[in-house]
Image (cartoon, rainbow over all chains, first blue to last red; front, side, top):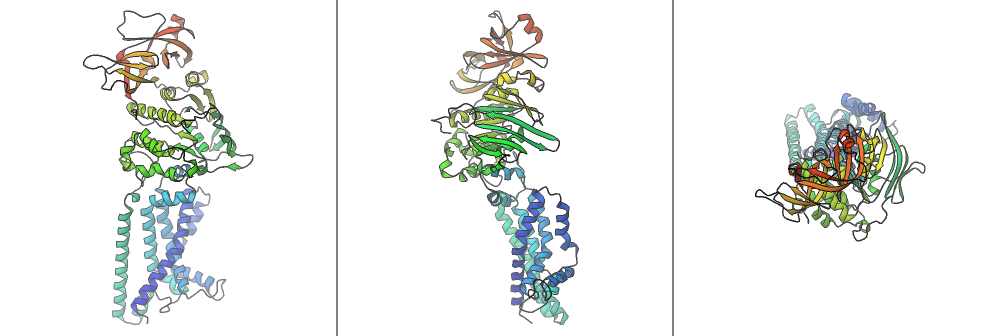
Amino acid sequence: MSSDLTIVLLSLRVAVAAMLMALPIAFGLAWILVRKQLRGRFLIEAIVSLPLALPPVVIGYGLLILLGNRGPFDGLAFTAFAASLASAIVALPLIVRTFVVALEAVDPRFELAARSLGANPWRVLVTVTIPLAYRGLLAGTLIGFVRALSEFGATIVVAGNIPGRTQTLPLGIFTRIQAGDDAAAYRLVAVSIALAIATLIVHDLLLRRGGLSGRRHRAGFGA
Amino acid sequence: MNPDNPTPDSTGVLRFSFARRQGDFTLDVAGDFGSGITALFGPSGSGKTTLLNCLAGLFRPDDGEIVLNGTDLYRSASKTFVPPEKRRIGLVFQGGALFPHMNVSDNVMYGWRRTPENERRVDVDHVVDLLGLRSLMERSPGSLSGGESKRVAIARALAMSPGLLLLDEPMASLDARLRGLVLSYLRRVHKDLGIPMVYVSHSISEVLALADDALVLSGGAVVSSGRPSRVLLDPAVGGLLRDEPVENLLDGTVLEPGGGGASGRVRVGNADIVTPPSDRAPDAPVIMALGAEEIILSTGEPSGLSARNAIAGLITELEPVGGLVYASVDIGVPVLVALTPGGVDALSLERGQHAYLVFKTSSIKLLDAAPVG
């Protein structure tokens, strides 16, 4: 059994890595869904939402086939990377859905105005779209992060439950319950709760710093 | 661009000829804009905003060409499409579209910061003073009044030193007082910076007051273009005029403010006009609003009238529009007069004839013009 600290640090590392994978993809998908009038919008939405509707174990099994010793990415299963990838895929639909709502609240006229003022599309994204969607993007990121932290089903299938390598908080709690070590399980449960509260506090602090940029905005006059 | 060296040619700043289909609406237009102020006039849904968006590069036409100062911005034949950020065409959106997460100063500087140094020809400080924004720079857009927002939006577009400034209904949703103010700011900006302007308007009064040229759109096509007083009296345009009463918005200078029971006097064109008293200082710029239907036309010098104003002028246009006949009378500036066809016949009015404009002091409204800054 690895130490509590090892488990917590590994969990955070896996969740952060999952976010690094999921966020750019989620933003790109949300942007396409909101700003491009695609004929296949429904199809993209369905595919993106699929991990939400499937049992995580199924996702884990699918990943195991891809990353396992008969798959095209042989050697990647049962690693921290596999745990991160599983968390990222499970969290993606939640992030995309929140990002879609956030981007829909940004009036495209602000983006067009920025273009006409000499900003290229990347500049527009950085100086207008992201600041205006800040609140929603932050909420989506934290929902995704929390989901990644609590990921269990897909992770145990594709990454196993290897102490110090892939044993994250939920897996650690599971192991301790299985072993009948209630005291150890309680400690990790307490850590889980503390982590959840800390995430909420960080969310709140970041929102406050967002200040003005967080409100919903429409192009126009007055309020 | 440079106030010391205004563009000498009066036409051909922007030339366009293109088509764009969207749904069952087709915009199919050709025309050119000169270095002056051009009004884009037409009923709702005639394609005015779509035209501006195509010129600014926010919409892509299906085929045709758009040429600014000899440079292709769009040409379907050579698959040329200059993206909006490289066109240097300022666009003032109808609602202003000020960035809500930035204060006024950052809004104004947004385009300036993205303008290459060797293309910065407009002095931002000058623009800020010109539009009277100095005291607003730290405010957030949400706290601005309608008129203030419009001025900030105009300053933001000007700060990027555009080769052409497009304005989508700059006076819409403002009350009469603020309309006059924004109008005189636009006039001043054009006079000072020499940037060609194109603005969309629903209002005949505005077109007459501000524009050197007018382009009239209807159903996605250009139906008339040329001098505003001529274009708006074009029979092809007549049917488009709404029942909106036509108001003359004339630039004037206060001679005597009046007050204490005495009338004021304002210089408009070549005429001294008796107006209601106001609290404006002598020499202050002012806009005189006078409804076209408030004016009586007299062929001889009138006498024994209670109306205080009888101004001599020359009839330059006479066109039936709707159920009325509109006369454009030159008193140093053109003034539009609405007449009934019967009245025109009874006086046997003709173009080139001298006539007197008769109107009551109480028909005049004085509006604030941009303060001299």
